[in-house]
Amino acid sequence: MRRTWLIFSQAVTVAVALLFVVSTLKPEWLRRGSAQVLPEVVAIASAPPPAPGTSAPAGGGYSAAARAAAPTVASVVARKAAVRNNPHGEDPWFRFFFRDGEGPAQPQKGLGSAVIVSSSGYLLTNNHVIEDADEIEVQLADGRQARARLVGSDPETDVAVLKIDLERLPAITFGATEGLQVGDVVLAIGNPFGVGQTVTSGIVSALGRNQLGINTFENFIQTDAAINPGNSGGALVDTRGQLVGINTAIFSRSGGSLGIGFAIPADTARQVMESLIRDGQVTRGWIGVEPQNLTPEFIQSFKLPVREGVLISGVLQNGPAGKAGMRPGDVVTRVGERPVANTAQLLGAVAALKPRSDAVIGVQRGDQALDIKLTVGQRPKPGQREQ
Image 1 (cartoon, rainbow, N blue to C red):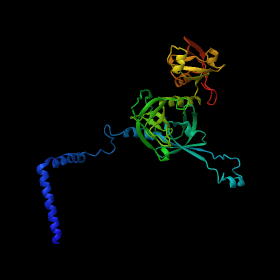
Image 2: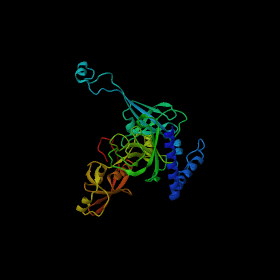
Image 3: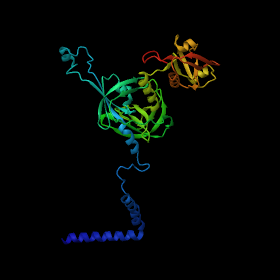
Image 4: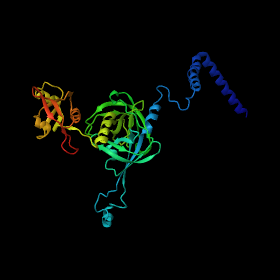
């Protein structure tokens, strides 16, 4: 006991001596630590908690936008009938030797999202979400479920329109897509991997993305808001909760988000939706040419006086352009008054023309600038000769 007390008293003596030395030679060491920590603790303790039901202060989040848009985003389950790929799947000997066709065929089920755009029951989603589905079921954010009817789809923009019959449907407000800028904050809302409605945030990374090989008509909004499988057909909204895009695709090597997602601009989706509801299809213009981007080498070789345009490498003989006198080697510089600098712009400008209407195509042929007048045709269905 005496030995223990002796050790304790020696330790206390050393500690007191050390404290005396520090306070005498380096007093700022003791003052600096307390000055940094204490005010921070006091500030945190004195901050009043936010009142229930109020939104976060400026810069603190986007809960108001999420509350406005989330009720309008639904989950979609698209079911396809069971199909046996092998015609011998029912043969017991074939199944014994090749282990194929064991057990009953199971129906296929796909998950996605959709956005309610009208209180009368119209929803926007992607064509690839519901393609070839025999049965489409929609589950709303409030838990209600309904069988959906396919109004129409447009594979070339990957847009589809559904219709459900439910009362008191919340509808999203369309935002001004033309005012969207790179760096604007956006939220992606959908049902990734079937886990339930999820909201992610990011910014607009780029606008007008095309030539990605996803759709025929590409004019994507690129965002780093996390978009994963199951988000397809969901909403991309601005900080006011207004619809600016329909989430469509991601660039990924693993199947998950890598920060590169693509959405169809809301104004494009709205135009397609209105055509599908009104006509049951999307009608686009067509002139019957094969375009390719103009290269600096071609410009130099043929000493062209233009630096932008679309090279025509082929002309359909009985198509609108062929009948009007357009030739391979011509460079299209404008459609009407709309200049074109690449194949995507030409595709969009021609598609916007009304079939059976007259149009003027500006062409550079060598050192000659020509105006070719033609009657616009109707764009063939996918799979037929295009543009």
